[in-house]
Amino acid sequence: MSKTVFVSGANGHLGYNLVKELVKKGYQVRAGVRDINNSSKNRFLQELKNVELRQADITILDQLVEASKGVDVFFHVAAVFGFHVKDPENDLIKPTVEGALNALRATKENNIPKIILTSSIIALGNSGTKENPMDENSWNTDSKIPYSIAKYRSEWQAWEYANENKLNLVVINPGMIIGGEFHKITPSLKVFLEILENKIPAIPPLTFNPVDVTDLAKAHIIVSEKDDANGRYICATRPYSFSELIEISKKFNSNVKVPKVKISRFIFRVYTRISYTFFKLLGKTPQLSPNQAKEYTEGEDYVDTSRILNLGWKPTDIETSIENTINWITKQEFTLKKQQLF
Image (cartoon, rainbow, N blue to C red; front, side):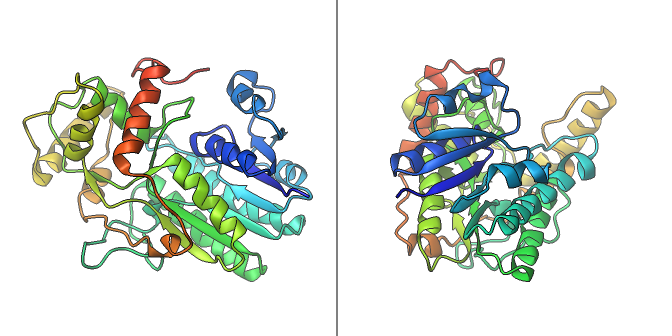
């Protein structure tokens, strides 16, 4: 008899790919979406076999409880995302924390044997070096960026709730999620749109820890199936510089131009502060805040992925993943002006 699982945020980049991988392995999947009546957003899920759509807004506990009754595993993938919101506490942090806690409350209410929660390496921080990388004991307690605060608080409180109520919680901390099979451009994927459209005039001093979305989906399944899986698991690669991402992208699209100018960390921070103030005065949304510019250029972002590798996780070569990302963007004709298929 095949297992039945529930996936929140099933029509997102990771959610959709997780549902696909679960179906391949013979699972019956209940796909939780915020608006079950939005056929344009949900049509890709409806094309899959053994998938049942369920109304499941993560901020509404009753919906999560009803949608996940009788399942064997709860995958909490849904997330509230936003770097620039008018009210960070109420529009981002509280919904993220409540969404995670509601997933755990539903797990408790329905006596679900296991819950897998998707967090982020942002919850770890950015202090890792090659000699002393961040690991599952690292926590980002000092961030001033609302999104980072939301990820840290939601995971920390999830662990507190799980321990108090003796729930079988496992957390995945992924890096920058890339790869194909997406129907809306995420902030991570937007980086590649900007590269492909040559919108990067100079190379900023930023690094990224990419992870292929299919690999990440498989990691979720691995920890759900391993009885001895516990705690946190980092799923990411080594840090890649912005210039490396551009150079790799150029291999798969000859129109990509590699900027000749590299911006120093000091200039980057000063420029961000000035442009942030200027954009605010004009009533426009800046790309980065001064806090983001500071925190994103503080550490080297090296991470230790030995825990998930020891469970048999085999990540794809990152160049292949970037190629898949670029090919999917090209196939779906995504542009900075067209960022979704619905």
